[in-house]
Length: 340
Ligand SMILES: *Cc1c(COP(=O)(O)O)cnc(C)c1O
Image 1 (cartoon, rainbow, N blue to C red):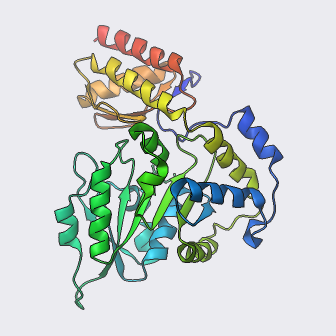
Image 2: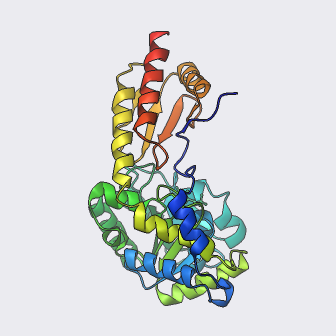
Image 3: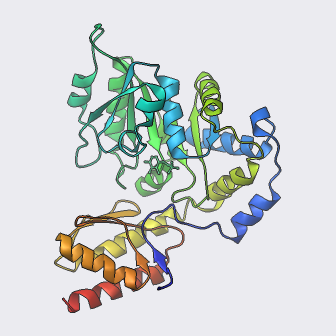
């Protein structure tokens, strides 16, 4: 067995470094279900400030954060509009339907990740006993590593408002979006009633998300968190990692984006690979299925891990991927295609 050297499968694979572990070890803690953990409170306040919202609540995962947002905005038999490719619709095991009795209304994402607004408008149901009540528009930024155009976001939020819908942003990677677009997180969060931010993706914390919104929304979210089993006790131990990540790992996201770009440009030199140029830290490429499999196997034999199947691959850069990793992949690619 080869040792695992470079893991490009996801930005969730990062390990806490010594500074982060020290911050975790030293964190003041209390019972957060009693509201007595000052590190958790500090993290919630920091993310609320970062996003320009009144309050935040610390949660074990982005999946729980999206579910709680949906359940806090929508009741049983209500409906939310989201992208066909949205994490909250496609990659959360149908939680909104199963646990929230909330019906999804998916809409095909455009090539830039947006939901065409004419389609969104057409999907909003009028008041009629035949229909579920459309309550919420949920967007995602970044989506598939792409930053939503900010003018589109403003139009989408305005459309939702005109129809009396609440708005949620799955901002698992909103900090990547902010760094890539040279805008503040607050600007990207503007107009949304709630935003979910992941600390365990590019930011490099081992666990956790923060959901933000106004005081009433967060009060409902706290009850739902308890209901769903997400009330944690001395959670300051893990919240400290999130605080550390926000203090140390934001500016460096630009390095991940630059490395992704360099990797994409290097891989694109091989004719057999069709590479989408990345805006942030995620590269998608396609190839003939057998070539893609051979390529991934060749990489794996050298301890380079990538995700994907059926001729599609996803390469993700992150804190634990340095310049040496990019060189290793590009060298391995040269050898693979020279030998084909
Ligand atoms: C990863 C991710 C989530 C879920 O986060 P987990 O902590 O893995 O549950 C939600 N939305 C998006 C866009 C994500 O990338």
